[in-house]
Image (cartoon, rainbow, N blue to C red; front, side):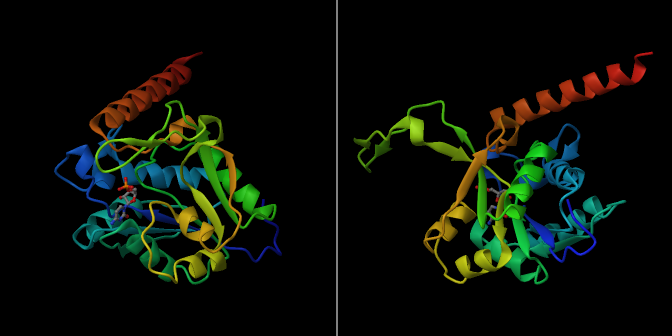
Length: 240
Ligand code: C5P
């Protein structure tokens, strides 16, 4: 929780500029509806509901900026900026970082993890406030993971008990993430760039609901979960 003397500024960067080829829809993934609203809106609502974010910067494809602004500016309690993303996820995050010079702490949160519970977002920020420089949520992996070579031959079977599937939001001291992004190397998550600097990254327990909506099956799951949630809210509202 903040005090009146707290100078910290937590800015959430939301990469939403991916095309979402694996989802097979006709629009960029972040604009595909889930539970009746665009994924991006649902993800941003979660960030606002967490109560721990001072500002939100969203990175979208250039031609979708006007739509994104219209979607997220309606009655937002938290200031929101929309900027143009890039061709790789790292390019999008770099654009978001440049638009958040005031940040002392940064959360990077995929629009595609729209169902992430606000409580998980708050736990990541609490861990940053407790002194961690880099924090990622992670869940144990259910499947055994194998590495394979280009011929499809197995080259290794890492011990499953030490593996975690990492999620977002990933939280960082802002200066650390800026340093990590000063080098132009490809990465599928932000913590990976920070690890290259030799900085320790803390993993906290993630949440199955923070899954990334990637395939049509994920989208069905997300829709089913939101429909269930709406039903239970409705039944609570009509209960005497
Ligand atoms: O492609 P992937 O599923 O890893 O994308 C994760 C998140 O990063 C999505 O929310 C997607 O919109 C975003 N992204 C982006 N810019 C890109 C590629 C992906 O903002 N060039």
